[in-house]
Image (cartoon, one colour):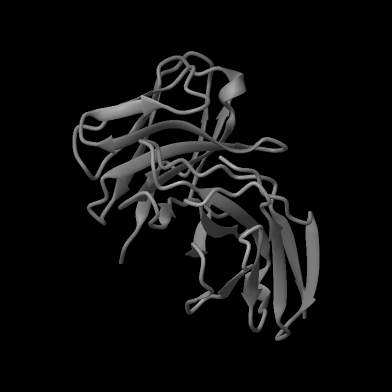
Length: 112
Length: 112
C-alpha cells in the first residue's frame, strides 16, 4: 500500500473546526483515501472515504487535492468526544485482502 | 444495531493453555479479519477471511489459527499461547473492498 504522512499530534478547542492533513504523494489512480479514528480504549471507527471528489457525511468532510497527493479531514465543530487518534489510509480496491494498513496517525487533543 | 462483538473482553492466562477469542458480526459481511495492536507497532493483521471456509494469513499469523464455518463467526485460536502474544486484539468485518470496516471493541489478552 502507498504510504501516508500525518502530523504526530494536533490540538483544537471545543466547538472550533479542525483540519487534519494527510500527505500521500505516491497515491495510485485506483487508491481510495480512507479515514478512521480510534477513541481511547475502543476499536478503530470508520469516519469517511473518497476517491477524487470532496465528500461529506454526518461525522466529517473530506477535502481531496486536485492532484490527489494530499487530503484533509475536516471536523466542523470539534467536541470532547472527537479526541482520538486519526488514521489516514490508502486502499486499493483490487486484490483479495481488504487489509487496512494503519500508520501512527494523528493524536487529536480537544481542549474544553 | 450493526455491530461486531468479541468475547472475552479481557483475559489473563498462562503460557501453553489453549484459548479461543470469539468474534461475531450481524451485518452479513463476507470479509472478516483479525488485528493485534501493540505499542509502537500499531495495528497489524493476523488472519483474514473472504467468506465461509476461505481464510488466509495476514502479516503476523505465527502462533494463531482461525476458522470460518459460518458467515457471522470468525474465532481466533491460540493453541499454545506465549507471553509475546500479550496484546490488544481487534476483529473487523466489511462488505466489500472499498466499504467501511467495522471493528469490535477489542480483547485485551495477557499471557503470563
